[in-house]
Length: 83
Image (cartoon, rainbow, N blue to C red; front, side, top):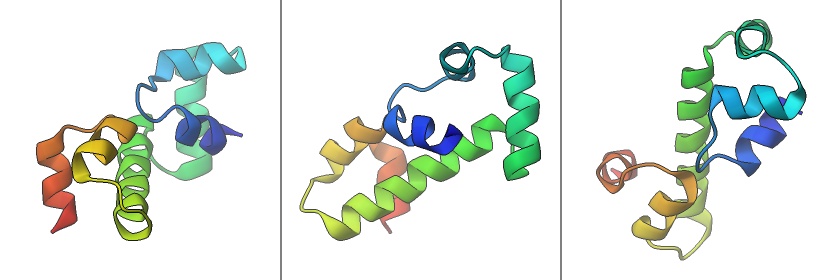
């Protein structure tokens, strides 16, 4: 449920938006994410962005610019991930 929302909204997801979607307080959702994934929200978001980016680079013909836009990561960061 949390991961589905995160992946579907990866471009502009925030803890506050996600908490509002599920009807939680941000502080509670932050603790829940920590318990479920043993990571902070920021760590989980970054890991998910990198994972999606790598998959798109490997499995599609999308340009790095397009992928940058899809996952909401600056182009310079993706160029580092790509190497």
